[in-house]
Amino acid sequence: MYSFYGWVAGIGSIDALSGSIFQPIYLATLIVAVILSAIIGSLVKMGFRKTVEAGDVWDGFCKDHVAVADWIMVYTQDGLEYKGRLASYGFGESKKEINMIDPKLILRDRTGKAEREIPCGQGMVFTEGDIRRIAALTSGQVKESAPA
Image 1 (cartoon, rainbow, N blue to C red):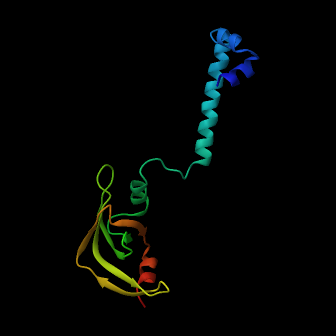
Image 2: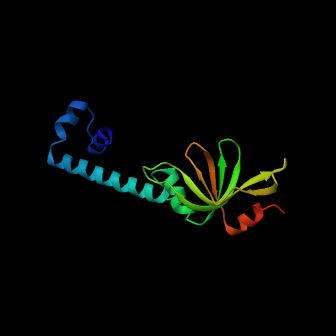
Image 3: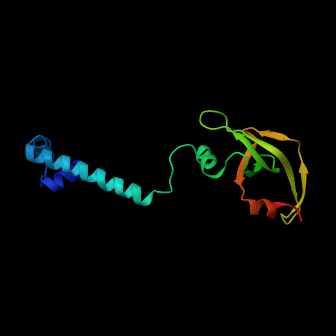
């Protein structure tokens, strides 16, 4: 910051820089430089980082892609795959858990094609340690994932 200020004000040494900061003309230059930097930084942030969202990834995904009663697929740590409707999920400071309605275990052949769906009761809870990955499905993807 001070090197930019020194360059703009035409100051060549550190001693001259420290003595001149509080002179009115240089102080005004410093304030203008700070404001200009803030404006340029804001423009860059707005222009190039529109798709970057700060915060918890879990909360952002669930807020943007998953609503209660949507179809989801949960891939577990032990390699199993379940499909069902989302009943609820943890967000914020709560545990990252998923409650699924009408879960079905998906069994696939060696080529990855779904062979069977095995119903697993009326509901199932996946804890934070169980979940490896989650996929939000559209209605077309739900039909595609069903065995032929």
